[in-house]
Image (cartoon, rainbow, N blue to C red; front, side):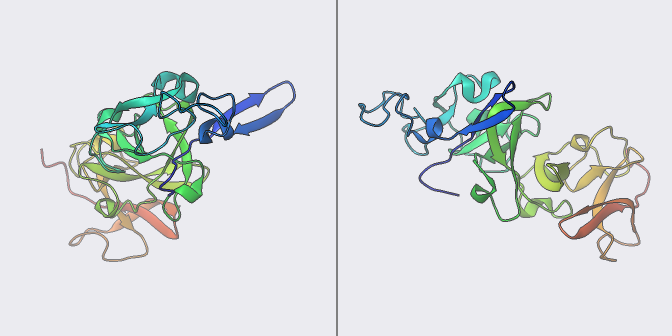
Length: 242
């Protein structure tokens, strides 16, 4: 990821002409109409024209001025935290510079303009609100993690779940507290390393290609999802211990 600039694509659509235009100039600070553009004076807002890193001073970072409006609401300096990429967050103020607290997963995710800004194999996708709708114009990196090894990429208290971003992709999301074998309604209910399986119980992720991927005498069962060259299933489990 570029150290000098963490950009996000601002997209405007012309429905009548059926055209799609991506305006990177406004975000890169090369648009003369932006405050402090070419030939102008230094901007009073250090974030004017882009999501610049390390420009806001101690304890601050470039962030969305009005999160509900996405990039259309402007970019400004706001509080930053110490939570690194793919760590659990309650608000954007928890997240380090260059990252955004994705509300649908409650995890800090790096800003991006395309997949080249992200870890190898990861995708640059729309940031999401609590109701899972896109934040206008804002894109962030997925983690490209393995669901059977969440702590290898995700922070404490976060799971690696399989999401769809055009194709299956592993991404970090805040984990719940429900233990293996206990009832669940969604993946977010389950503790670290577990998924909400098709029988609506929390079960450990496993690889159908690896006989020893489940503990003890437990076996890796269908249904499975194919991701990154591996067929992931769920470990058989005993009844809920609670």
